[in-house]
Image (cartoon, rainbow, N blue to C red; front, side, top):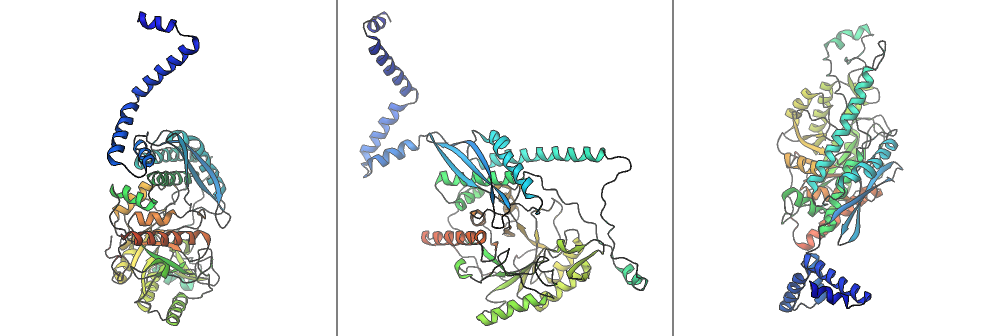
Length: 522
């Protein structure tokens, strides 16, 4: 020690500072095992003698780098093709001492009066509590990220429930909540029809809708953005990354889900009297290449909105078009119908308004479907033919037509109630608080019976739905009609994935599907 101090005393201040810096550097290098790693790298370099020496060294030390960590989130408002606001998220990570960013967003099932408030709240959630919550989190730990997001959402939901309960308790004694009109088959003012009306069964009351919590878009958007970040940092496409999340490792082979293409829009928002069939969907052959499915279309859903008076007319129109094109309807291609029946219920009459001024009870509507499917045998699926509450009719219709036509239920906004009888498949959308882990769970629980669906309010650049459908190993995906930036972005992405899989020799074709769309009742 004395000798060392004597040595330092003979040095000038500048020399002493230089010496102490060298000592500190040596200590720093030893503490981080730099000499050992450099020696190992040089030894391997000499043994292998790679043509790209510096590339070899770069890869060697890259494998020793600290794992990426999320450092911040940034939420921003964007607009879809209709000018409606939506949300996108930027995820910033530190990777090898540099900042990397990935963006993603999901859609919301919101009414025209809701989006502004929902989007503003979502951006606030992303920039403040979610940003603080996920700082330092690994972008590769999707399940942990999604658990944190879902826990945050549940806590906010409970807070909102408490606020609503307090508001109910604070109602004045004379005040009361708005009660929907009594659910009866129809008004009995007309004495001549009183007898027939009394014979009709009252319909089950509507289940209270689950409120969409303002800000919920933040949860699904952040979850997807983190998954996209993980995929980018791993250097793999999103569909491969999701497939690995689903099965712990990516499968050796992939298949492309069959694209259900919207041909016609006939719902309440379309011209004409017909309301019953919101969409007529083309179901191509299984195994057919995506780029071969090319009917022209144009509408808010990507399909023409044509004026129809009766439910037979759109099916006849499609049949005529197929005949003119030389396509065998029911052999080369099949059809599906999105009925969206919940929107058609008139609770004052207790009936569905299938066309303007024409109302059908649940039993009568069941007969309509039975007749249509019997006449148009190319129809292999009906989506949401009844309200969820009409369980008896779901079961009876499934028994009547289930041998040739599947009943599908949209579960996106439904409560976690008992499964509907007669249902063979589910339509799932990535919206609101749905996380990537939720999608994987639902697809696993209902293997072979999930159809991924799109919505209208999505950022134009968002093509992740195609990756999700392929990554989840789904057999079907519903992307809308073949027009509009939002939909064509998804179709183009599906084509790109298909071509990539073909080039790599890992695309497999699913066997040709035969009616109905899904094989077994759930």
